[in-house]
Image (cartoon, rainbow, N blue to C red; front, side, top):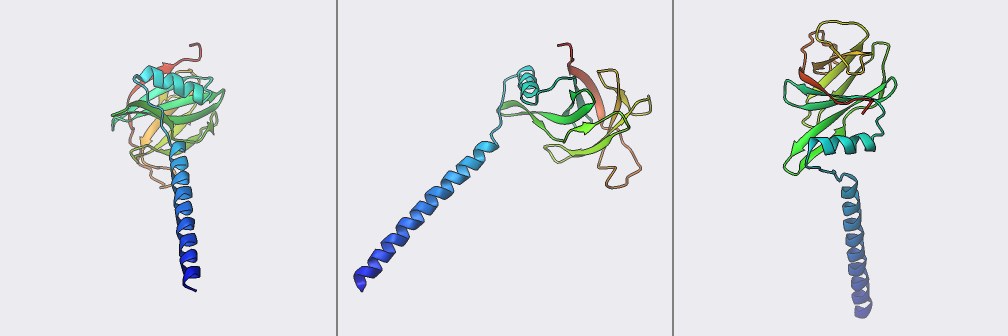
Length: 171
């Protein structure tokens, strides 16, 4: 009887070791999915981001009043999304932070940055306060602080400090 208990204990210990090895394997496999490709320059990062996201159109870089660098990306003819250019101790990386949105009919969408700041983008086909011309010349866009759509906030505070074209369709 004592021998059977010892054998059962050995089997249980082996089983626990196997479970721990499997758990470590899954944890390391999951962390590989979140691997971030860092680059030494903004240009290298944007080139990699453009290839990875298969971007066919322009990219405008909006520096917010909070110093964040948002990439307004024309991925296809009338389809846009927003990414973020981030610099940390390992270098630069770019990350997509919004879904794709079809524009041309007054689109708007909300997004959160890596630092958890909230913004709303509005698109119009005419000049208006707080709107800037997108580099493709076809759309005017505005970036405001907060999630003004879901929070029904009528106070719009522009979040745009500066804008630059970083990729032109002809490049």
